[in-house]
Length: 266
Image (cartoon, rainbow, N blue to C red):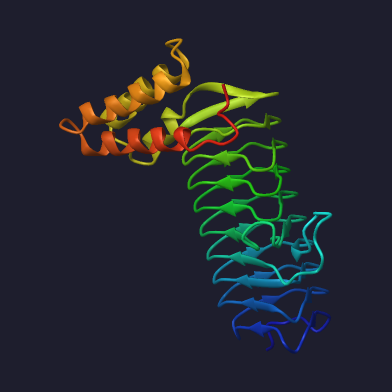
């Protein structure tokens, strides 16, 4: 039996693995590539220069690879690249990139993307992230591995969200959210370390304790931003003899905030 429903419209130029399942009334465009064991739900449209890896599950009525919602876009052949083993639920919208950036929107592996999520042009999403229902990220946003976005949260364009960070539901994020930190509100402000999440992901007690110290240096000690960065880097050096893992996590924390262009959520 064919794995493509008889009512689906699949362009003859599309490159579709023989194990791909495509549901009723789905539409697949000519520049689409879909890897093994991926499933496309009913009424979903996959268009543009879109590459989808293996073992993905894309729900009903999703819009994948649509043109960017950018008034500068002039039909350039930009791309959407999706990795492997992602769950992408109903009514999600995932757009291709723009030539004003790298021209590619990227989604990594093992992500859980719930219903009505919007991932705009030129975004970069890492691995193992969770986007709760109706989370929305604007263009050029970077979301690092293991980050979690709460339902109905909104993220301003060009913002970065660090690894293992957590943004609460119905929050507005307009500045960078450092790794390992929880934030919520309008505008989102920090509410401590994501300690429980770090424990679940196997972080050592030493690493979590060190990150708590770094959080206090950044947010609780009334230090200037420059002084806080220096203090966190010094702490990383001091911890190296006790725990290489803790020192590495502190360096990640420091390097993220040091590279911020928009400033960090405070």
